[in-house]
Length: 286
Ligand code: GLN
Image 1 (tube, rainbow, N blue to C red):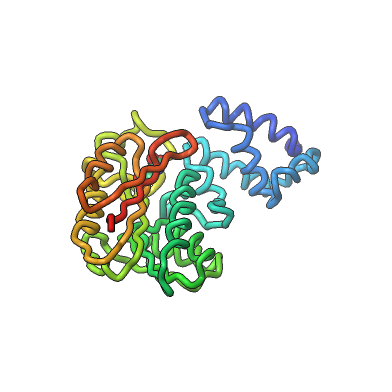
Image 2 (tube, rainbow, N blue to C red):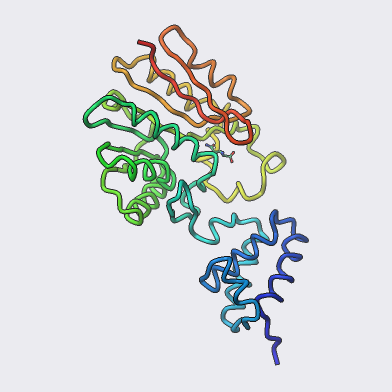
């Protein structure tokens, strides 16, 4: 007879197993995999402490555990993530939404609400899962959102997320930022571009999980400033009153800010909850 495993036995086994395999937050990780198999919330696990797992459920769990110990990100295994209070499908087609990026959304929200225009237009460069534009479009049904990404995978995932969140006022389109020319059509440009310098993108510096995510979403394969130089060109050559709001890398933030410093622009830097430079707003001074 095969041993019957209950939720509590599995949990005890799993948290030590994950700890031994160097998975951070081992208990939480294991709990969330149990929840995926049982299709329940974390609180329900404790109400179903003595639940005996069926052989097919054990098999499914084994598969998920094996993915996690190879350091596949938990969010990809669960297939969804919460961002700014909304649910998003999350898989290897795009970067996993980060909690720090919610700061990009909250400050974009503030800027958009102050745009003094009947029907403002907002562009997002590099949409990934679509979480930034979709979260904003939900709050501003009268604003026209446009999102571009070079990755067809990102466009397909973001489109699924748009449907899931039932927002109409966004158009996602596959475009290379460096070939896009219609910037002057927009009042605000938002972006969380790839900003890890090439020399920093190595297994010695970064956690294993990061290497499951699309490389083009993380590094520009150069000095980490390539996208910001282009954004500086855009604002310097624009004739309208365009604003930029960008997520920035805490390690290169000084260099990034430097790129935007001139007599015609004003920059505001915002720190995240870990006191790291995270968001930069660039506006023209009147
Ligand atoms: N914040 C991400 C990380 O370092 C990087 C995202 C990006 O390059 N924009 O984990």
